[in-house]
Length: 637
Image (cartoon, rainbow, N blue to C red):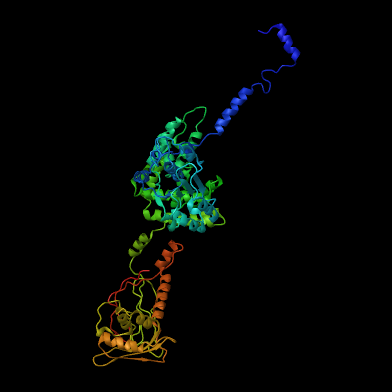
């Protein structure tokens, strides 16, 4: 107790500071500052639980076994190339490898894969501060000047370690000049120098560099490996996270250990510090944290499109857009959903994807059973093309809406197979096309007859100048055969086919493109065959060559002369005209028009004639010059 005299003495000294006056509890403020500093110095899980030796690496057993054998046998390379996806551990592996190369303890002074105890240089190497382990980021130091610095320094011995080790991260970012400047040193480095490269884009690294390195592909972590890593970290952090939440994190990490630990960090930060437990961290909460909570609305939008509900689909799209969703992201989510529904039809395990809630998995199974693979594939193509259009469009929202309208329009459209079945089962009575009428008496091929049963068209008649329309019929080019007899060489088309069968491509090209046929008389018995034609201006004379070869091929005499008359069109022009005629006829056909209306943007690429072969001989059946084909079938566009 304070005496009265003491109280008086204190009063004489001046005013006293009360207990609640500012600055009184300075020690309490210091404790609070230390607590804040401790929170500010928090180390994220991806750095805190970074592997420190080869035993800590997950999923890289093949690489570890190869390096172990190399260290045991003394066959350690001078340059290593580590490649893999982001977050799989390339830089960490490079540091562990540098630690193994410079490993030194009181009992061991040699490179070692057994890093169970900390060596002299281990801590500095793992922290990236060792003087003899130089880490370089090629993304920021890409030029030849940076490589020249390395080349000049490699000749100096290491300061304290066994090797001077250069770790170049993202090595694919180096310039071409930098790569070329590194080649000689990389091929024959000093004995005290090692190179370790890391890259995510191995294809961008020149092959001249790859051939000088020992390459290791760090594989992507599987969901089970990622789950084991998360369990290990949770145990070390003394937290309990539900299994379904960890499974969601493992799936979302997509094989990256760093991504998995970063997502776990986010999940643990969501826990209420006052509660100190993870009871509130459910699977639904994790889906919300991972941005998967709106998948139900994506499914709703997909259903609206596939049922052709355009107004409802556009309203749902607008609602998501107003909530902040990017149009391209919406299309990407729809494409992802389409891919998952397609996998459900073929991969049974796809139905166990925990990134979807149980209600959505049930809904997905029903949709996969309802929608055919062709419909889903068509939706995938439309979304894929639409996503690219949206990313390039000046107004992404408008572009995305046009994609949704296009999808809804095509949702109930028949597939090409269904359309063909409808055409096959159409009632009889489709207008047929009569064969083309007359042709020149020489037998030179003109526009061939269209077979019946496909396109309605007016028969076309073509005659050479000065030739009556009742002249001998045109003859289509015979189908390719392998066995010729002189008696079959009855027209110019058969002659061209014979030349092609003999593999004389130069002569065949000249006959098709440079010859205007004037007259053709086949050889008969002792009578020589006669061919008269006019050459395209400026082309070489092939008469003598053709005469000699026909005599050798047929055993008959042929007289071939040049003419100044105009003659008929070349075979190439005739074929081109015929293709155009078929294309125009196809455009007029009602069934083709219906198909083009069903598939907007579709085009007729070619019109193929599957009709039977016509007679190879020129024998008019009546005065009108009509012929009857041996067989007739539909022409397929």
